[in-house]
Image (cartoon, rainbow, N blue to C red):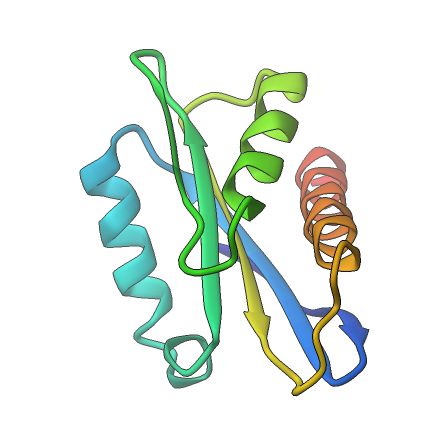
Length: 118
């Protein structure tokens, strides 16, 4: 499990991005469960994720409407299969509007760059 913490901060909201090998929805749920064993992530407002398997794309917005699709589209563009990416947000009290999608996209880009550099 690769975790990049405090990658973005805006108007009180903080973001982290994490991911790892994952081949099914059951494995994705297990990944989220393992991530949430870390108290900080369990207390997050949203743990939005997506996964591109050979059978089908899977996503979960976790209350951050549309964010799972942003992650999924980026996975499709990179053709990164059987690898889950989770963008975590701790809500800071101010609504971010459309900026939240840019932050999700930026977080995923940071994760992909980190993945490719290792």
